[in-house]
Amino acid sequence: MQTKERSTQEDIFRNLPVPTALRRMVVPAITSQLIVLIYNRADTFFVGKTNNPYMVAGASLILPVFNITLCLAGLAGIGGGSLIARLLGQSREEEAKRVSAFCLYLGLLIAAVFAGGIGLFMGPVLQLLGAGENTYAFARQYALCVIVVGGIPTVLSNVLANLIRSIGRSKEASAGIILGGLLNIALDPLFMFVLLPDGYEVLGAGIATCLSNCTAFLFFVVVMLRMGKDSVVTFSPRVGLPSRGSIIAIFGVGIPSAVTTFLFDLDYVIIDKLMVSYHDLALAAIGIVLKVERFPLNVGIGICQGMMPLVAYNYSSGDKKRMEDTVRLSRRLGLGIAAVSILLYELFAVQFAHLFISDPQTVELATQFLRIRVLATPLMFLSFFTVYLFQAFGKGKFSLFLGVTRWLVFNIPMLFLLNALVGMFGIVWAQVTADSLTVMLSLYVYHKYRPAMPNEAKA
Image (cartoon, rainbow, N blue to C red; front, side, top):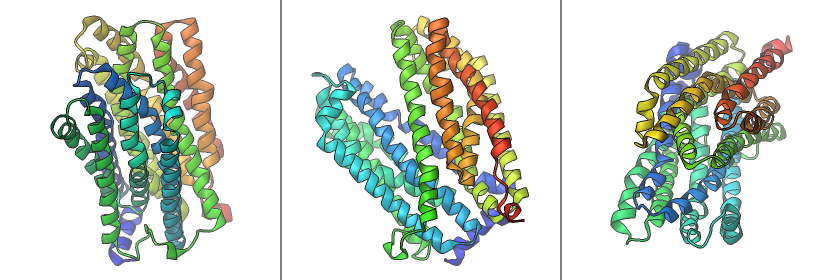
C-alpha cells in the first residue's frame, strides 16, 4: 500500500483525537447527504415547471424503481465497506483488496442484470407501476435514461463512495456524490428547456440525471487511479477472490442494508396511499412534511455513514476505548441535531410549510403534521444508529432483525392501526408511537447482544 494512503488511514483510524477523526469523516458525509436530498428532488422540481401533470406523474412513477438501484448499491457498498474497515483493523490488507474488487464486480453484475431486466420488460413494469395512456411515454423516457442506461454508473458510483469512505477517505467519497448532485441540478434546466424541444422535458431530465451519475462514477475512477495500483480499493481481478467467510460477511451486512432501505421507502409510499383516502389538502400537507423532515434525518444518516468505518476499524483492532468514544460522541451529535430540529420545526413550522405552498388550509395542516412528526426525529436517529452499529460489527442478522421489525412489525402496522382508530392524525402520530417501541427494542438488543471485542473474546 502506498505510504500516503497508509498514513491517511492511521491518522483517521488510530492517531487523531476522536472528535477530529469523527469530524473529518462525518462532515463530508453529512454534506453529501444534504446534496443528495436536494438533487433527488431536482428532476421533480424542474419537470413541475412545465405545468404538465402527465410529465410529473410519468417521472414520479419511476422514482420507486430508481430507489431500488440505490438499495442494490447498498448491498455491495455497505456490506463491503463495513468488512474492509474491519479487515484493515486486523491488518489484513490483501484480503481487503480482494473484498473491494469482489464488491465492485458484484455491484456491476447486479446493476447490469437489473437494468437489462427493466429494459427487456419495460412494458409490463410500467403497467405494474400504473402508467397509463397519458403517462406511459414519459415514464418510458425517464426509465430508459436513469435505469437502463444510467443504472450501472449509479450503482457503481454509490458502491465506490462506500468503499472509499471505508479506508478513511470520506472527503473524496463525498466529493463524488456532491459533484454528481450539483451537476444534475445544473444540467436539468439546460437539457429540459434549452437543448431539447418542447415536449421532451422528461427526456431532458433523464439525460441530465444519467450524465451526472456517469460523471460521479468517472470521478471515483480518477480517485482510484490517483491512489495507485497498491490501494485497497481496486478494480483489478488479479487480486483474486476473497475467502468464503468474507463473501458471507459481505452479504450478511449488505442484504439487511438493502432490505431496510427498501422498507424505508415502502413506509413513505404507504403513508401517501393512506392519506389519499382523505382529501387532496391532506395529501399535499403530508407530502410537504415528508420532504421537510428529511433534512435532519439525512444529517443523521451522514453521521452514521461517517461513524461506521471508525467503529468497524477500532472494533476489529481491539481498541475498545476509541470505539466507545466514537459511538458516544456520534450519538450525542445526532441527538443534539435532533433536539435543534424539534425546536426549529416547532417554532417555525408555518414558515417551513410556506416554502412549499401558499394555500392557507394546506399550510395549516402541514404545520400541525410537522409539529407532530418532528417529535420522532431523535427516535428515528437512535433506531437507525443502532442498525449502523451492528453493521459496523459485522452482525448483519441483528441489523436485519431490527430493520425488519421496525418497519414490518411496528411502523407499517401502526399506520393502519392508528388510521383505523384515530383517522388522519393517527397516520401522523404513527411514526412517534412506532419508533418509541423500536428504540426500546433496539436498546435492549444492543445491550444484550453487543459483541465482545475480538481480544476479549479470545481471552
